[in-house]
Every structure is written in C-alpha cells, then in structure tokens.
Image (cartoon, rainbow, N blue to C red; front, side, top):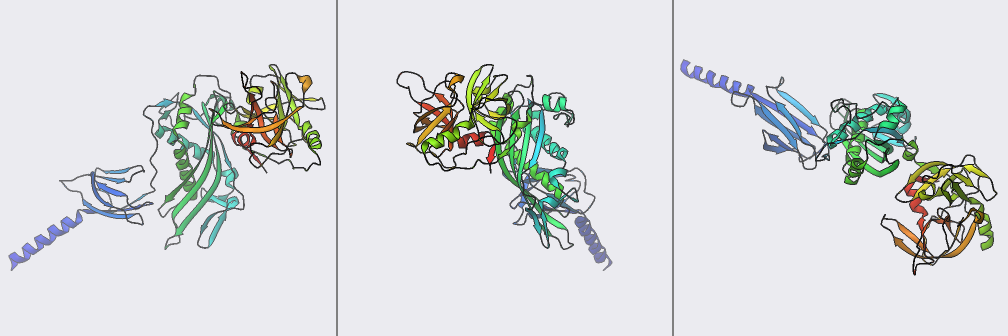
Amino acid sequence: MKKLLSLSMCILLCTMCSIAQKYKFRFFTNESDVTILLDGTPHGKTNGEGYYSLKTEFNEVTPKHTITLSKPGHEDKVYQYDTKPEERLTNIVWGMKNKRYRMKEKVKRSFDLAKVRYDIDPSEKVFSFVGKDLYWNSIFVDGKLMNPASSTPIKIYEKNIIDELKICGFESEEDNDDEGSMFDDAEDETSAEKKADIAIGAIVKDIKMKADLSYYRKLINLSVKMDVEWQFYDNVSKKLIKKMSTSEEITMPDLTSDFAIGVNMAFAENFAAALKDTSLIDAIKSSDSNAEKDYKEEVLKKYTLSKTKVKKFESYGKMVKDVNPAVVTLIGSQGHGSAFLINNEGYILTNYHVVKGNKGLKAKFQMGFELPVKLLNYDEKADLALLKVQGSGYKALPIATKEYEVGNEVIAIGTPETTSLSNTVTKGIISGKREAKNGIEYIQTDVSISPGNSGGPLINKKGLVVGIVSLKLVGIGTDGIAFAIPISVALEKLNITLN
C-alpha cells in the first residue's frame, strides 16, 4: 500500500511539474486569419474577433521559442523568447500594419515635413461611442481636450515620416545613425526651408474614430480612419512633383487605446500608402540633392477663391465688351504674353512658359496701368501658372462649369505679336479634342491666334472661360489650328477651388 501511495505521489508530482512548465500566450489583433507560427511551424489562426490562444513549454529540450504573427499583405511581427517569460500567462496585443514598400537600394535624400493642414469643419463629428460624441473643435490629443488644428504637435508626425522613409530605404545625407538628421531644424529658416531636397505637405481631409467600452468602462478597439492629400515639392527643380490622396484605417485592440497614438498611427499608415506609388519614388530619386535649393511654400497651398458671378447679356457685342477688361498683357524682360483674372482679388491665370525666366514681370490692364505680379504656383509640365497682383475689386471672368462641346462658338482675347495690339478679340469654334503626350486633352479651335496670345482666355458665347490658349500648330497644312488647356485642368493642376 505504501509503495502504491509513493508511486501515486510521484506520478502526481511529475504531472504537476509538467503542468508547471506550460506557458500560455493569448493574442489579440485587429485582423482575423492571422497565422501564428511557433518556431517557424504554423500553430493556428486567429478567429473572427482577432483572438488566438497558444500553450507551449520551456524546458531543457526547448529552452527558447520564436513566435511569429503573419498575414499576407501585412508586416510580420516576431516575438523572441530566449528565456522563460516571467509570467505564466502573456497577453500579446498587436495592431497589424500593412506591408511597407522597400526599395532594392538605399537612396540618400533629405526631407522636410513643411506643412500639415486640416481641412475639416470644426462642427464635424469625428468620434462616437456609447453616451459620448466628440467634434473636431474639441478632440482628445495627448489625453487633453484641445483644438487639433492648432495644437496637434507636428513633431510627432515628423517621427512617423522619418520611420516610414527609412523603412522605404531613404537615408539622411549627413548622419545615417541620427534618427532626426533626415529633417532639418524647422525653427531655422535658413536650413529647413532651403536644405531639404523634398518638402512634404499634408492636408488632412477627414478623421473618423470609433471605439467600444470594456466592462470596466475603458476604451477598447479604437479605430481611426484618416483621409490625407499629400503634396511633394522638389526644392531643386522648384516644382510640385506629385499630388495624391490616401485613405487608411488602423485599429488598436488594447485596453489602453489612446486618441493621440491612434491619430499618429493613422497618419503613418497613410504616408506608408503614399510611398507605395512607384512614380513618387522615381520622382524623389531623380531629384538632384547637390543642386542649389530654393524652398517655395506657396506650391504646397490649396487656393480657395471666390467665384465670379455669371451675367446675362443682351447681345454678343455687349458680352465681349464686358469681359475684355479682365484680360491683361504680361510684360517682362523676355517679351510679353496674355493672361486673365479669375476673381476680383487679383488672381491671374496664364501659361507657365510666359512667366518662366521673364524677370520684372508686370500686368498691363486695358486701362493702361501696370502692376507687378507675384508667381504663386505653377505646373511646368502642364504649362500653367497662377499669379497675383495686389489689391481687389478687379474685373474678372467667370469659369464654365460644364464641359465644352465640338462646334461651340468661342472667342480668344489676348495680345498677338505686339503690345500695341492688346485685348484683340478673335472668333471661331471648338473644332476638336486632342490628347497630348503630357496626358492633357486639349481643346482644338480654329480661332486665330499669334505669338503673344499664349495665356489668354478662350471664352464661350455666355462669357465663361472654357480654356487657356496655349499653342498653335505651324507648318504646311496646319494653319489655323490652335489649342487651349481646359479650364478644369488648370484649376486641378494649380490646386484651385472656387466657391
């Protein structure tokens, strides 16, 4: 009997010893079907709620373990346990990240997060859970209620940008080991705004957050969806090289969900999505980091301008007489061209080739007075430029909102050949639509134009601008064919919104 009791005690102790060696891992993610690998071997998958439980041993045979969370399209997460965990139960919470784009080779470039702007209505509801709604003008940031339009720290966003750029394969030109060296000091205008190869602007268009409440009245499963418009400006070529939009969502499935962390994670996820565009990567790689830089903040701006009111005219002649004063002649060191005002606050549209290198540029109005102009924005590839003269109350042209049709009557107003012929009016029709190598579908017209007409308006019979006169075909059998850039293309390329 004693021998049997001893044997039973021995078996019980061995069983307890074996149980004591069991360690449990519980996984909580924001994704279902996440494969859990134990030492490289698939062990199971998370369920529809992103949960999975794993038990394993740490003993002389297996003194350490590697646990990997994997799902196609996402970054793997690896947990290395070289010794036994301190606790028998380990909770692992992982907000899964989408897979990042990685270049094959490292590229040295400097970057500056030049501007983060919010285009969100202050009264818009951005967060909702049981018994509580938050609006944009009173949102949690760093645990405090504040106005994010003025208080969200840009430095946190900078850290996100640095991390994502390094994952992609970009390196600082000066110190690859210094985490902050990829950005110049934002407070030093002589360095930050002139040394960075690429300036980055972000317009946050929308933020939506939602969360659940735990049994203990704490936030869980906080998700943040953010829509961002990105603008990448090449300080070397002095032009906007890419404008794009992203819309990404992240989820934080833990019991300590933090608003500020969630917003910054969503910002990082959106920037990572932007870096997947290979045309953007190619544009950044092609910039010359050794060239002289000249930061131009205006290009990163969005221009919201008031519309010019549409009038009704009793006759064609009265329409022409009314719109003519809104057309100006641009005169500079390299000659002249045409342009026109799009609102009464002095904003002017023209071709970029009219202003490029044309020093001392002035706008000469029909009444004879001249005013200096400032270049605000341009797109060299599309041959478009936005200018401004000081003051307000100017005569301006209304913009056509409907698409033009072949056969519509149109007039061109401009300054052909010589400045003595300013505000010359010629008439014709829209004779076709032609797509060019730069991807723009031009308006083809038989309106008579000459050198100097470039940048002037193409106007329909209602007095609305439908296009910007751009070029003329010259050669055998091509006389009388001219082209204009659709006004809708000009507004889009120059980041202009009319309201």
